[in-house]
Amino acid sequence: MKFKTVLIGLTSAAALMATSASAQQTWRYAFEEAIDEVQGVFATQFKDHIEANSDHTVQLFPFGTLGESDDIMEQTQAGILQFVNQSPGFTGALIPEAQVFFVPYLLPQEGEALNEFFRTSVAINEMFPELYAQHGLELLTMYPEGEVVMTTRNPVRSPDDLSEQNIRVMTNPLLVESYRAFGAVPTPLPWGEVYGALQTNMIQGQENPMFFVESTRMYEVTDHITFTGHNNFTTALMANQDFFNDLSEEDQQLVREATQVAFDYILEYQEGLTESALETILESKPSMTVTRLSDEERQAFMDTAESVEAEFIRMTGDSGREILEQMKADLAAVTD
Image 1: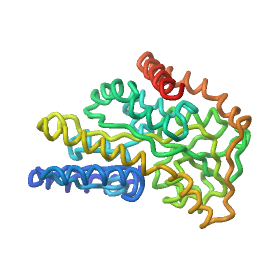
Image 2: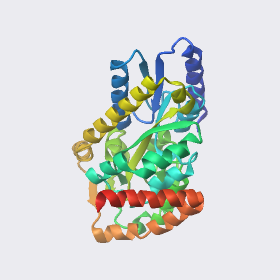
Image 3: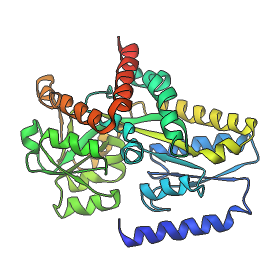
């Protein structure tokens, strides 16, 4: 992490601590994206519901205002922030079982079956809250953000095309393993360094949902978009557990209601978001190539999933195995 980023995070945290005593009705909520991206839209819906139904104010902190992802998690665990929205991609270092969301070809890419899985999953709604609680976090919800695509400098139609290609991944051990199984050289980098690393050819590609590729202008420094169908980006809203437990029953219910309102809204909001973002990219850069792998081409990537599952179980033991088996059962319940 850059010194400047650490300094920003520490300075901002100190300012928040200094004002906390005089702002008892203000709840602070940080997330990993811009205010007009999916997490920001979710946070705005949450904030609007809280403020419309109580005397509380919710102060939102988009990406970068309080540092990187690990900064905002530390601030939430310390009670400086009351809420944090963070992907299991980063939380996986804290809660290894959360890395299950990076087993390739486990989740459907998009659609009602995926949404129903997030609504009804026993793993998400019963098992994961217990794991998050062990780290001082109240897991309020998990939700999808869109099918993950690769954007690369070179065309990709098979794992062979990723050979010796440095692909940026989040600092997540299982995602590293997944791209290694795909044949790439996985390169963990903080998000703030990715555009420049692509620009200078330090890396040759990255993965993200399409809306994020468009909003962060990743297409400017890559030439090819590939739909491999290997994942849907998942994120989670958490509260500092001590803060949540100290709330009145009325305020706890208010938080849960606001979470549900934002959850329902964001699922509807995302309908067509991938395609509209792709249209915007192609208008801005008509030379961008878009490849949707055929079933046969996709199978070569799918064949790597078994080794990644085995690595996940090795990392997490019986706890991870139980989570993985339950998720598969939950997914079968909404797809059969």
